[in-house]
Length: 394
Image 1: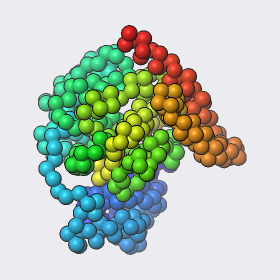
Image 2: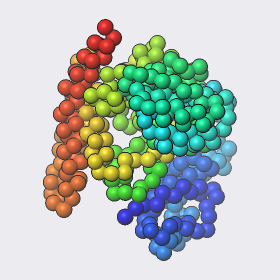
Image 3: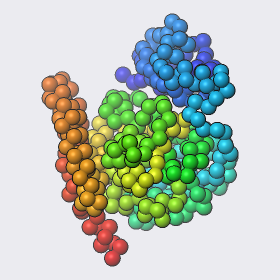
Image 4: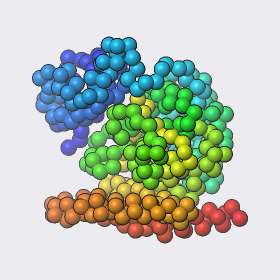
């Protein structure tokens, strides 16, 4: 059964939450004064979310984050310790390939952002048609850039070269940025040591069982508390908690400081993913910081069918192991194979055993096996991809 996704603000809570009659449950994203502070799943009865005391129930579901926000407001403080600052000029970059309908929806969401002098780039990666160009032409002020070399990280590096602002915010064509997204990302760059900022990614819809399973197995959200990551206390090779490339901003200077994104990784290459994983690791190893700020919210449309979900999870496995292979072979990081072994032993193997026991749920077993197969392909995929990139450069 589908799940309704509802966006609520505790500071302006309605008396009732009407829901379409076809839903029997709802996922509520809860905010306080526009800032996400938690979420909760609740049943739906006769077109309404079943809540006796809505404010108290939702506030307790958010836990300490809610009371922290309330206390900070009462004391005229900022809960994350960041003073109000003008938003620095930013570039928004969308890397896309042959998904004009998704791109149109994304650009419509970006058009609703406050005007802080940002520019918008669309990087059309190895296009087979002019569909992307025709969509961009419908949005005045959006700049179209064609990049004929395939690869998501190739497109990201092209965006960094084309950008005219010091901060470049990336999102995907199947994502919908919230109105406060760009300002929330940009404010974190007041710290000169911060090189990358990520944000909260919530499901745009949960209409199919495949979308539900993705949100259960591999959600993009990393919680509702702002976190600063530093290699002094966080393992740089454990980059999952840092966020995801669908919701990420970087300083344009990463091209000179780190060489940009590794073009042997991520979508459009044999590795299928892993570009942001490798990038976060290199940022931390270079002595910089990564900030996760849940106030920077985007809504993501997950894959709707099981075949796409299997390919996605297999690609995630391939990309992570490809990034660890690079860390081991190129940077001689012995922590990388240790992370791979730990992930298999403590997470993947128990997940496989649980799926085998559930004889009624063959789809779950297929998803686990797809991820494991992707992991097995990771080292070979990286070697193939790195060879192709090296040959192209020569």
